[in-house]
Amino acid sequence: MQAALVQLNSSDDPARNLPVTLGLLEQAADRGAELIVTPEVTNCVSLSRSHQADVLQVEADDITLAACRAFAKDRGVWLLLGSLALTGGADGRFVNRAFLITGDGAVAARYDKIHMFDVAVTPTETFRESDGYAPGDRAVLADTPWGKLGMTICYDLRFPGLSRDLAKAGAGMLAYPSAFSPVTGAAHWDVLLRARAIETGCFVLAPAQCGTHAATKGKPRQTYGHSLAVDPWGAVLADGGVEPGITMVALDMAAVQSTRGRIPSLTHDRPYGAP
Image (cartoon, rainbow, N blue to C red; front, side, top):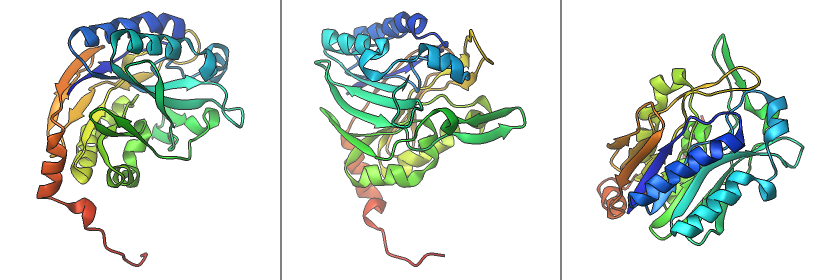
């Protein structure tokens, strides 16, 4: 199966970002991609909650979702929108939601990011995602023509129980669309992605935001880039570097079962008392 990782440098203007995203999707389809994956917050990267309130939309009205569904139907490819920032959370907060779109333009699955990025990376780089975004509460496993896909978003990467549960439920692929901090990215990005692949025997697909993101309001955000594809043995198949673009990767799904046959740790759980 031919997959494409789309690396973006999204601004805080969804209307400005959309033609750039669609252009890269078209490039990926032209290069033979059957499954295309985009990063977290494909539609809008912003640190300003007030600006987000002004420009974000509810799912039914979102211009990026509508255009990407039309693209998938027109080109007959599957598309994982790594996430869109949307309004309409149950408690008035935004939602960080991934969409798996079929080759006929239908939404096959939705996933709301479970783990909120509430951290102090450095004294000058702090995040309180839960101040603006409502967390999801349900793991999502989706069927594709190439096997089952476990849907996660960014900070979920640091919670291996989620990936293990998805793998034990049948996932052969795990998606980690992200907008990683440059500091944590340099220290942890590749090793965490390789660990999740090794622990689960899954292919890992991790499209990323990159660079300094243009902001009309608030402080510009910076992200790490380096979209990665990792095989079930933990080998890095492709690295998207630090610029926007397309990274193609061929996945042989037979490698999932052969790898798990060599080290069947998903079947070796034993009960134990809590510490």
